[in-house]
Image 1: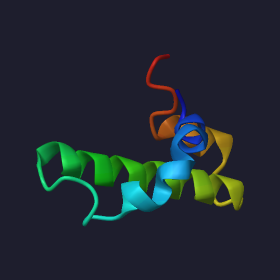
Image 2: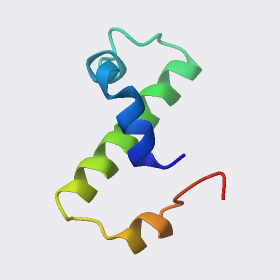
Image 3: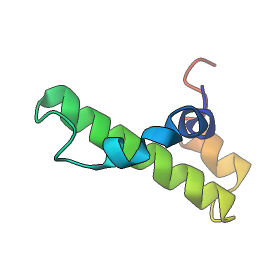
Length: 65
């Protein structure tokens, strides 16, 4: 799954996934906040033309592939 695919799948939860008050204050909660922030940021940068396909691939791209 790519960052863009993950963003599309979970964007309806953006408010919850971005709010430290709503995400559990635990090790896993910190990971959730960090990963959602990275997914959202990369997707929005890509959509605004700030990242190319190549830059997305260099950043890890599809973890399954």
